[in-house]
Amino acid sequence: MRIAVFGDVHGNRFALDAVVQDIEHHQPDAWVNLGDQLFGGADPAGAWALQQALKARHGVLEVRGNTDERLGEELTATTAKRSMLEWLHGVLPERAGAYVAALPTSVTLADGMVLAAHGSPDSAWTYLLRDGDSWAGDDAVRERLGDIGQARVIVVGHSHLEHVRQLGPLTVVNAGAVSRQKDGSPLARWVLLDGGGDAWSVTFQRVAYDAEAAARWAQEHAYHGSKEAAQLREGQVTE
Image (tube, rainbow, N blue to C red; front, side, top):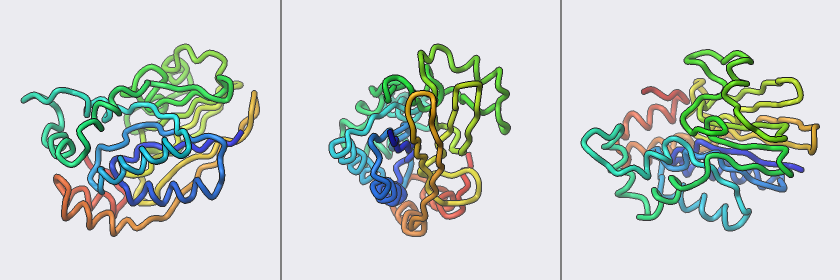
């Protein structure tokens, strides 16, 4: 079975369009979206429409990310990222926030052999494979996994950094991110899982896209557009 996994689109329609074309070229049997679909400023409404079309066309399995949860929150004076969320609610369809916030924390496929989540199997906020600026140790990863049933592959996003770890019979993968990179390269990322049962291969994919066009869109339209544009051009997220 060939499974295409992508996530952390962060409202970047330009990067997602390139990733979709690349995935379709590989003709996978299943698609998985790891969440954080909309929180970003390179045409998030277009990114929403494309992800909805993909779900209809390919039956994409979706999980919710931490920023998807934010989009479902009631905005108050103390809401983190409130100004960005207000802008997003203004440009997205009314139902988008509630939709992504209601997605499951994890999904399984390939008869339970593959489990996909945004952060960890039971939390969109937990970094499964990271401790601050470094990779977590094996014992820490095992503790964060919790009950994974019979899964032989765990694939997550959230950190925006590609990684693969072998823990005995278990393969743990971070798929990287479609947008908002953290390594100085603007290339969009996704991962192809190929196999079945206990035997799976992991192939990371990097896709060039028109980051300059995305940056121009952000500069002209997005909240804090200059910051968003710089991040897209440089492939380096700044808090």
